[in-house]
Image (cartoon, rainbow, N blue to C red; front, side, top):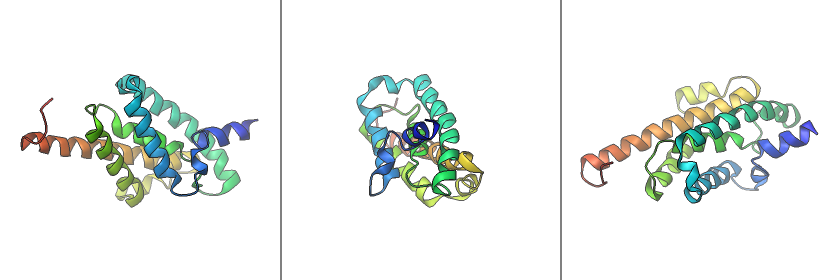
Length: 158
């Protein structure tokens, strides 16, 4: 029963089994949930979901690594948590949501410096940590882009 729960949760309720780019598909699903479920725009709720996904991801990711090898591609709860972190406190609207997706995927795939180092942590910690850092970097990058757009009067100031 524990293994079944780990499979369901770690794969983001099966999205991780998508045959092509399951991490990207999970990230898109996270953005769509955020965009179409307005209550997720509440930062406290979104941060709580990130924390819950992190705890569940460390547990289930560790079990899945024992069964499937190091950082299995079907484990996508890390993309869910990282993408939601990339969206926290951003202004509503499709531009910020799309930018968060693009930056999150960029940092998750390119794994610059600390993101790469974080994935070397053992078990589920490594699975989750690199995506959480990628989400943080994505969030900060979106903020920087939006600030530049405001500065040049290309985006309404908030």
